[in-house]
Image (tube, rainbow, N blue to C red; front, side):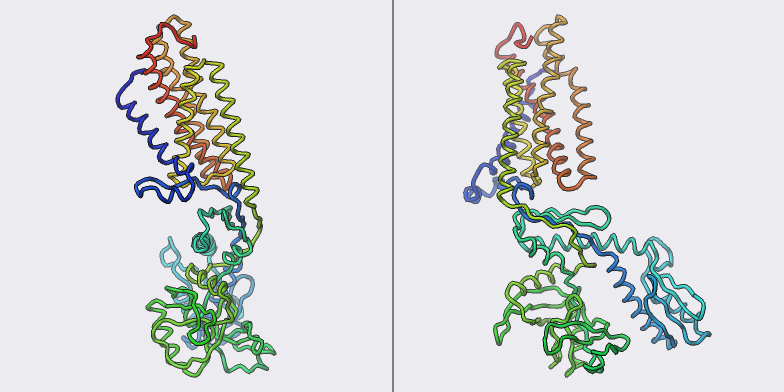
Length: 534
């Protein structure tokens, strides 16, 4: 096994070159990295929140609010479908997690149930003919509609996944480098934004639902009726920032929704130069917006964001181009933030902030310094042990392999853009100890073979071949444990597991292959009669 094969030498040389190229940018200042040739790597280690400083948020997706919104929409669907079928009804509303309605004519109860089963809800995935809304009859000519349990579970899971993606797009738009956005438990999301020193702005941008709708104003309701709470079915009372009209009665049905937007950007009003948000619809939204504005000239429509009216202008003419702008006492920053939210898309459900904290850059610098000191102390201790135990030659070869191992770890983490955290530094220190463990096994086996009377070359060859199974077993179990931690852990655990996984792979390569090549070169050059460690 102790042979100086060309492929072994070539592999070692390539590994050292790879490590040097991808680890080098970490030692260069930013301006020098920018001047590197395009074919050279420029990626550096990404420092995590605990090392770089930044903001941490623990958010909970409000799936109960999602359910309430679905029930509200279901009430409107029932009202519209029964009216289309010309079936008289009363007492329509949400009761006990479902929708109840009483059919006035007893002879139309079955017809109403059939109509609602065929038209309300959507097909349920994984079933034949099943729908996500269950329609059941009840005493006193009543029908009860409720969502299937599996439908709501799927909807909640989908809402959390969608929220993570939208949060990621919003944080990316802020310019935060390498944010960490992970799911925790069933309906929680952890956001770590290194370098973002203003958690309140981060919370405002992330946590706003940003659900934009365009709804017609219900001008049939007088201000006195609105103040008295006499709102007709199919309409709702929404707040507005305008002191002269603090509330506006609008139709519940949305004419156009924010999902139909393809572009949103901050700009300035062409006449008074106040900040506005310009938008453009897709084809479907443009057609629908054009139809509504052409049919309602002289009437008002409301631009509603998160159930709050931004403005309620009068339609002066048909808007057929599919684009327009929103004005509403914006500042430049709030207009930019709203445009960002509209570009990223609306959250499917509100987000509740469960925990918020900020890590200062000074604290991160202290953590980096502590990590450097602890890594340096660990390295010096390992160097001293290996040289005292195995002499300058064999101990030096093990240290050389250890240095290449550290180089490869930094290179691999830079290449994969993995985030280095404080627990990751702990994994790096553990990797240093595990790396020399393979050398200890090999060297001790060589000693045993020399004591058994074997020659130098036989003892060295047996040291590698007989220790290999133990090395593979030990590192394979460590790798499996690291993979399990990475799969099921979160935050710091993942950082520790990722560093440990890379370190296990590189340590086996360096401790075995690089040590083999260096010892083979020494043996061919020196032709020793005895082992220095015997």
